[in-house]
Image (cartoon, rainbow, N blue to C red):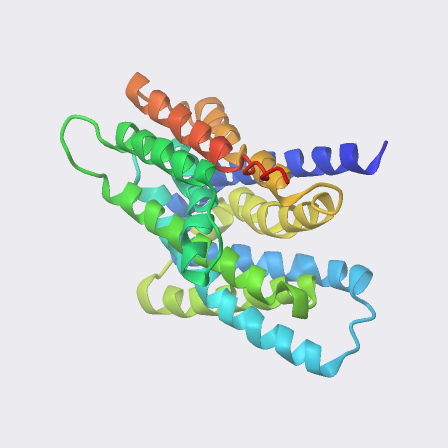
Length: 292
């Protein structure tokens, strides 16, 4: 098996894991509360990265780089905490878990648009993709009246923060230890979620035990394994190809919601999902280079 084929398989597995994670978030959140669920799953994700660090970054001996990695990891962890908290509350409040995956994937389009403020060139395809996705968002969220479900609004807000998080990671990436950086992010998310849990949620232990499987899935598979597969998968393909494959998480989310939660969206919502997905794919089309 060549490197590119291996990368495509790993990235597809990542999309499947992340897509079904929305179902785990919805089921787990019903028993534990949003902040409690995130605190436990990010703690598990942090623990699962320890052996990965020992394997792939055992020679991370530069003390200055390690301190820089810790500081920037904590900073990006705040963004990730905000995005994941908004997403978790949104998943619990939206009418369909499958819809949440498509709205979350707006971050793929928002990244190049936000990049304008960092003096990065945004392609025409990104603007066309954004327009298609916004039209899809309308059909996806607007039902009987011109109003947006509060859960949908929270998920859209989470997409904004995920976009900011990706830009921040891109900025710091050349000067950090990548896996150690993610470990500090997840620890930050764990601590902030735990503080919120102690302040706003009082979840009985038996409820947490009832949500063992969704918590394990969200922590070990979605956070720990998913990140590792993404990192290994992106070694053999370009970022555009990786983004297109990873955006398929929304498709697996909708599929999982139908199979496991028996959710059936309206035809209008499915049409909106299709437009959002097409918009995501169009936004990844690279601009043609001018011929010399």
